[in-house]
Amino acid sequence: MRSKASTSGTIKGKLTAGTVVTVLSEKNGWSQIKTNNLEGYVSSEYLTRITTPENGTDDQTDPEEDKQPEETPTTVEKKVNVQAGSSLNVRSTASTSGVIKGKLTAGTVVTVLSEKNGWSQIKTNNLEGYVSSEYLTSITTPENGTDDQTDQEEDKQSEEAPTAVEKIVNVQAGSSLNMRATPSTSGTILSKLAAGTVVTVQSEENGWSKIIVNNLEGYVSTEYLTAKDNGSTNVTINKSYVNYNLTLEDMTNIQLKVNPQTDTKYDTYIREDAIVFKTSDSTKGTVLGSGWRLRGGAGTDYSVVSTLTSGQVLTVVSKVKGTDGYYWYKVDYSQAWVSASKEDTAYYLNPDNFINSDIQSLQFLKLSAKANVDDKEVDSKILAGKGILAGKASAFVTAANAYGINELYLISHALLETGNGTSTLANGVEVNGKMVYNMYGIGAYDGSAISSGAEYAYNAGWFTPEAAIIGGAKFIAQGYINAGQDTLYKMRWNPDAAEKTGTATHQYASDIGWATKQVNQIYNLYSLISTYTLNYEIPTYQVNAK
Image (tube, rainbow, N blue to C red):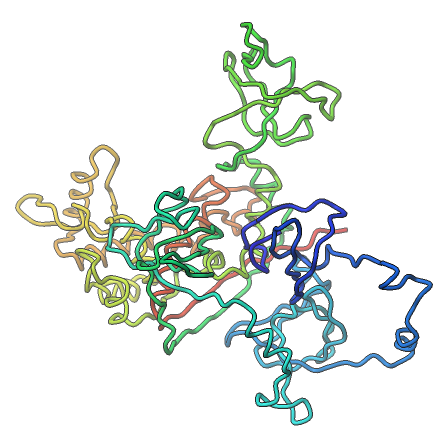
């Protein structure tokens, strides 16, 4: 059960089979429900109606219902409602895992044959398949009425539905806003939100706003939120698709060979003959010999979480019979990074899990394509108050033009590396009598960051902040971006190499969630401005052979 009608909604609870729920409303394949004082949203396809004597049984059908099958089913025409430049996938089945049979542009008129669970079976130009119902809108005709002839019941629903609005965190550069579990300064701090973060405000009361950001729900002080600029926008969205001659399972198996990592906390189990209890404490077991594998379940058919060394002491939680006939101990294991499971690796590899999220879809943003921002707007809405970077938007635009790189990606990189324009390297270090600047931390090695970063800047000739912004962009572009890995997704997974060589190589990180963790800052920057271009490149994998 989720906090909103989307798989990106926060999970509020889990319902077991047979649980009885009250359905408050249903739309686009999601049902708003209530049960045991818990209210939220679930996928409608997993709910079935309870048959009661009042509702009728198979032997007590309504005469009018008996007549309906004899009548000719009616079809309606609707049009595709997607943003200009994008398209709507037509799939072979009513699921995002269905094969893409074609793509429909904005405004295309289709015949809807049926609709169920948020999917519409459609036909157009000899193409028949399924599309998401939320991207179809009714065609207004004189017979159907106009905008002035709306249904009274729809008007009533609009008035009753709570409206959520987006606002921006408005705190001083370098500081943050506490997001708490309860509307009180004594509430537990769930997160710290940086200046410019875009949040969704669900409600507001007594000086506190209930918000959602990055799938986290909590409360912040209303006085530190400002309205998001919803004025005129000049946004262009372009999407392209790259088909790989690999199934998602092929790609997953390739990645598993290089032991991808995760900071997800797994349940962990060790076989009973792998440990011995050397003290009277029955909760402390010592590993006997090296090479024993800690697994994600009680059995050798579960994925390996980590490999243990001789002498490690584990805290035993419980003992269970495994799927292989052995007894296994469930143990506490506190290592920060562990081997990712096959299921989790496949999840992060699958573009379908992210492409419909405004934030997470940015991992498919082409970083080799300009954002076409207005430098004056960037100066006033993004770089204002950002130390040495204030007023430098034109330098980032020049860098983007010179080296074919997204200027907002450069700005995001610079804000992070310079601490919002306040770092020593960014503000100038004297080397051989000359002031040098370094805006991206290039050449700044741990233990000697200032001296090594300044030396690099001196040798590169970065004697002005603008030279550092433009020259540093060349260094960034020459890495992954010019190598063809010009999206965060491709930096992490490198599907081109996987397709050509069958191996996982030249990957920026081992963390399976790395790409999903990089997009929030970029999203926040785009949210602050009204003029830009988004160029997406989305990978598609072959459907597994049945």
